[in-house]
Length: 306
Image (cartoon, rainbow, N blue to C red; front, side, top):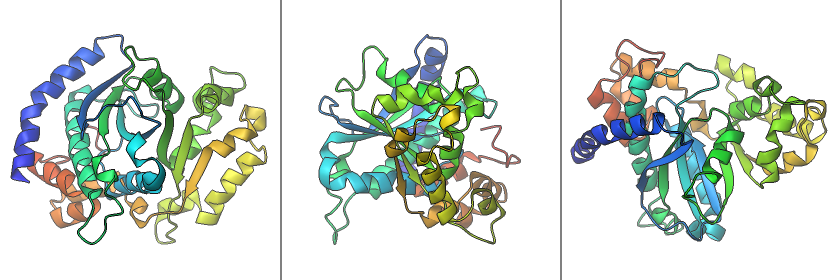
């Protein structure tokens, strides 16, 4: 781990330069770094994990591995993962000075994800996944629909085969994705989703586990409540707002993973309290080590400084 931390520290000046160049350019998307680089000419599916999380947790690892594992038997050699960080967030004020650290966290997470996909001595079922390329990218777009268009309209196109995009999200993100308030410039508002779905892109939604002792669970309801939400989309509940019922067929549901109950606030609080055992339980190995080494979130459980 010491070698990994040292190597990442040496990359920080490069990340800072990339951020400055990207911010001052007209580009809407840029790949910063790739773990397991390989040609993307035959790429069929691009899995995209929004990386606004601060910091990455085992919940995000669960989102990524769940999708990749389900693809293992039919498209492992023609899929790719993109960890995508937006320098503009629809709900939060950005803090540019901390963006370098966010890229560093994404880099550690990408390496941890790659290691988690390596086959164990007793299980070779993930052998194809061990070589999946994981890109770390930047975009200036805050909304999922615009993120996909930013990728496909980049010149030169980093993914020339024009793969379908599958955004890996939690149930809370699905709710925001389908919330008309974010698309007030369109009429009806959810017609803004048409370019995304008409291009064949999809959402892979992992449901949240229900915990009656967790107050945040009440906001999203039971697993059955969450499944019913998708049925309501199919039944036309948001049709007047512009949501085409056929689009619900582009939304895949995955059963909840216990790790999805992990919140970033909980991790930041553990780090502030120097509860490194707790941080290690909530984060992947490399991410936890980087947080400790950098003294991240000291006096800042909100994450606004990072």
